[in-house]
Image 1 (tube, rainbow, N blue to C red):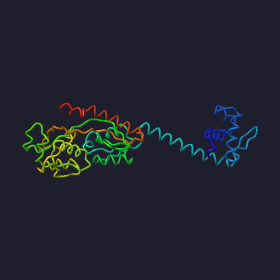
Image 2 (cartoon, helix red, strand yellow):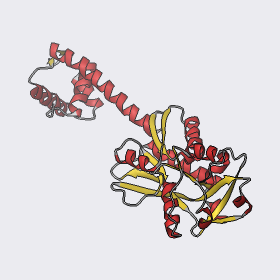
Image 3 (cartoon, helix red, strand yellow):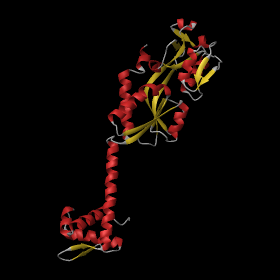
Length: 307
């Protein structure tokens, strides 16, 4: 097959359909002698005569008839493959796989994915949510187009592009004595029961850092799989939790209050993570653009900095 060129295939089909070397040469914009040489090279490469030709007529041989049927079928498949590629580029079809943090899944991520489906109904999407460590593992293994996650040091083969910085705040029962304060210090939490998510959570990392900064040796009394369970436990009086400020408009805060924390103010960088060796698909590029537009329109991150 390596001896056969696309030009020879085009010439053969043109001659087989026109049954005229002259008309086929004209359609390929070459001289008749050059076209005859093209067909001769094809026949030599295949080791079989494809045409019986005289000065008056051209007839396909049995081998030529068989080759024509199969080549036309092959060219149709090639055309379809090219159209599929163009459709993916136009976002008329394709698949997008996104992984994200639960706190973002309930807001901007699902909203942006919904907008993608509305604008490009031919696309299919998959959404996976988990703690930050799991998202980075999936990304490193190539399971997702990209992850919307918290920045993490020491990740090999991954690149990160900043989206925004979000503040973490304390959530406690609105009847709790500390709810009367406008701002809480970390030392005021020393005797309080903490309800935090699993070890791979980026929030857990920020809390550990703040406690070490204040020389507080404390463990969380309760561990949950997600922040929604943690909020329910706070409402039930088990203690308090730490959540992103940006998630509060998306959750039920009945009976709860939130307060800012100082010294330090816990923050995390929300980024788009992707494998360094992967090219973003057209769908992934468009989704990132929609996500950034939504972030800018809603002022996420900027609200925390302004307060």
